[in-house]
Image (cartoon, rainbow, N blue to C red):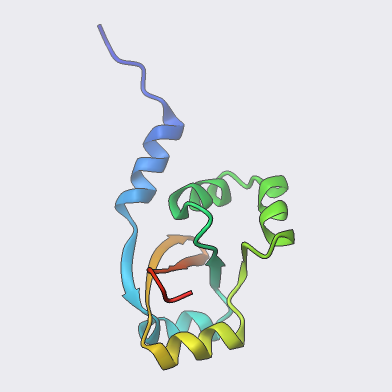
Length: 105
């Protein structure tokens, strides 16, 4: 019997495989172009990326209203630069989503 392929699960798995840790200092070009979005540690990075990829505006709006998601601020960028922070990253074109690793919040 052929297994049913759940497209949502496949897309989430693909995004999970595309995550990587990167130093904030390597992200400057993307930050300067305004393409870096912050994902709060309270959110799951892969799930957030998936919701972005399916354009779930209602849920994204809730996260933004709760300050759990949005453009990286200059203050965050400065703090991460000073700490030489490591971030989890995933691309949902044209955006790069970043989430602090551990205590880098």
